Image 1 (spheres, rainbow, N blue to C red):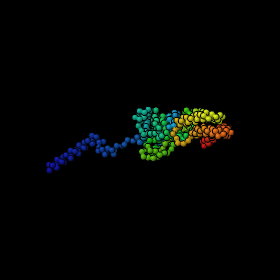
Image 2 (image 1 turned 60 degrees about the vertical axis):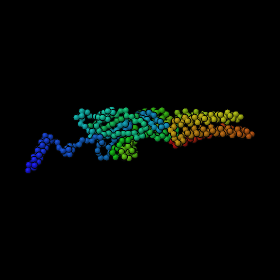
Image 3 (image 1 turned 180 degrees about the horizontal axis):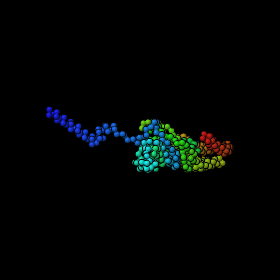
Image 4 (image 1 turned 45 degrees about the vertical axis):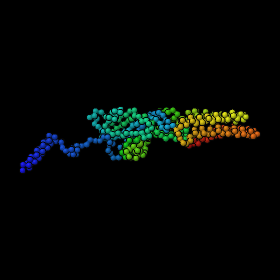
Length: 368
């Protein structure tokens, strides 16, 4: 009986202690009850929940094209990337905040102080350089946000050099939202932003013929296993200023080829001099091919310049064949036939040479 009384007294004391603690601190309760009754804070590090994907207005202002490297098939550019979206969770009362717009500028304020989610853009075809030299985030009272970033980047793009030095290219820089597919975050162009705003741009040996923006669905590997993403594509249309290549290679080589035709006016008795002149032209054509190879990527197809160099090379090789043929005829006592061959080669070689050049250029211009 005494043991039962002791157990009863212990239970009564425990109950009184629990009741006293509840009276002192009414909100104290079990961990489970506290989690059930305390409302959760908004999780600002994820995209805002809404029906359908988050719509982000994206635009890009191209400031300059610093370099176009056809050999490595890439180009360097600078510009301003602007993103706009709405996140109601970041709305605020201007009377409480004391401002009509919250502004976070610079890397520290943006990375450490700005409170919410933002679409992080990456350059998909980046080629070694992607620098942000400035960033500003502006948040208005209704939660509308504008992110402005200045970029200096290098993008890898495909070059079709088949018409070099009269080639035209469409350079592309593809921006994508990192980690989200098009069902979560979708890019849109603001009204009238398909023609990307630019300033006057000058690039050595190139002319900028057009700049535009577009939104493209593409397969991507940086969306956490998802495959279709929304991308902002900056396209820069450029055309090579061909006079540099024509002045450096084409015009001098044409003169050298024409001078090599002078062997048909030389005395056939001096066969060594005629061959020397032809071989000097051949070696010059080989040297020009080496110079041209340094300005072109290592491609497996022919360009217009390759065709011109190769035909110039073969034409001067043909003069060597004619010289040897005429020499054989002279030694065989057929000097009259050798004279007729020389006289005909004086106009046949220039006619065929320039005819090939004009035909090749005509075909290329018709294709473009």
